[in-house]
Image (tube, rainbow, N blue to C red):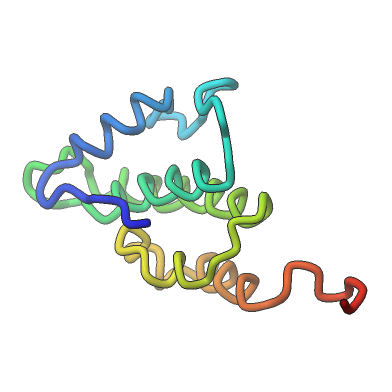
Length: 126
């Protein structure tokens, strides 16, 4: 799955966040805003936040550099939640273009390391 990113405007990502009921200024998801709240929903939500971070500072983006840093921070929580809920495809996290703004972050690198490990490393062998 690839999130389609706008080239010069945050409007598509902003619209997606608005439809999901997300308040960008507080980086919160109100209860019930994401009705199904599946692991894929949380992954896509993290991708949208990361995409906003990537738009930061671009002319016409409407996202300042300061807001971009906050969006990058806000992207990590839903990505961790997606992993915790079972969305553990390293390839998806590795190849999703929307996550490019996060790749240099230590917390993202740690998340990728977690994905490389078995979900239950001490679970019974089958």
